[in-house]
Image (spheres, rainbow, N blue to C red):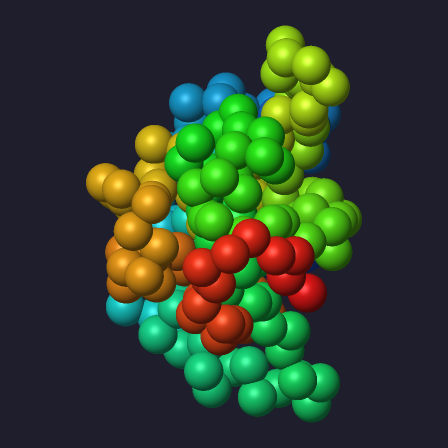
Length: 209
């Protein structure tokens, strides 16, 4: 077999078997030192694989943690029926909070509440932390030293992004009624992210469930 094609087969098989994104270091670690391909060669193979998958139901994409093979967004409504369990859904309040962290990071809980006009539920913060979509990146140097939140590499991976620069443009987050239409983040796995499924913000601050 052509050595180039053999390398491509190895990389393809590794991406299929891993169940997670693989970076160039992880791919290099598959090989003995004497046969280890250069990172530039691996990147070339990955790009060739991505081209090979054009027009198919699955695709090779690069996200923050590396490369992975995933179902194309256009096919996900049918593929999701493979799982009997109903996918999880996320409230409008959670997705608005996540969007504010993504676009305004680092940001405190109080600053999120000021923009949204409602208190942020402890359940929302806990869910985002447990999903490892956000993390505490520091503390604001003001009385009480409130935690500053930022997004994680897992957040980028989940939404199929290589970096925060890949986020869709969002000119003004204060206009939260337009958030659903502007924030069109892809959802590569079988969980359904529903923006706009919750209640709209109330006029007076209160804590949301």
